[in-house]
Amino acid sequence: MGKSPFMEMLRAEIRLRGYALRTEKTYLYWIKQYIRFHDLKHPEQMGGEEVKSFLTWLASVRHVAPNTQKVALNALVFMYQKVLGKELGDLGFTLATYQRKLPVVLTAQEALSIIDNVSGIYGLIIELLYGSGLRVNECLRLRVQDICLKTSALTVRDGKGNKDRLRSD
Image 1: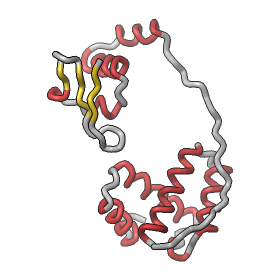
Image 2 (image 1 turned 120 degrees about the vertical axis):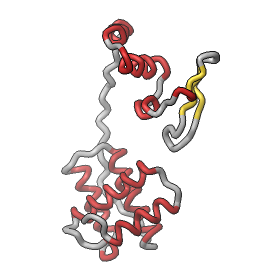
Image 3 (image 1 turned 180 degrees about the vertical axis):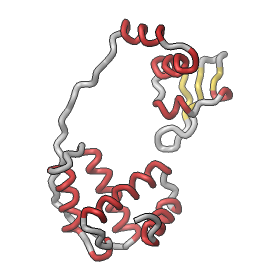
Image 4 (image 1 turned 90 degrees about the horizontal axis):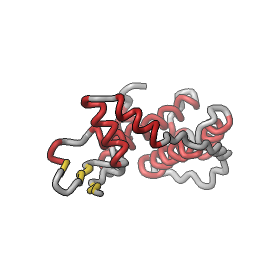
């Protein structure tokens, strides 16, 4: 299902609307999964019932997280409304259940132990992540000119949602 004209039309519409590259990749992934789930049937030949069965399958068989199911839904709604000009109506699908798991949090001693045992560029990355609260991608995108040692500030470029922001003490 490589470079089909339909998928390229979707890609062009996503880019035209200025969506983030990550959103483009995610939407195209879920739309491909939807098409594969329905044995490569073209989305124009399907509608709300097929979307409902796909989303229910994601929850009941694949056991995806609720947010994953919502992302798949958003991708399909985008395709049907913005590209195909079709309304899906009330879908009434089975919602994925959220199984809340407590995060594993390092103690201060464990965090310091990791920092003390990693040196070089990786040590710097770990210290930046731990000390600043940056996301991994944000840290990896930092450049020398983004760091102001005088004011202890970082300029985070193209953060979540393609937004720039300033991090300081």
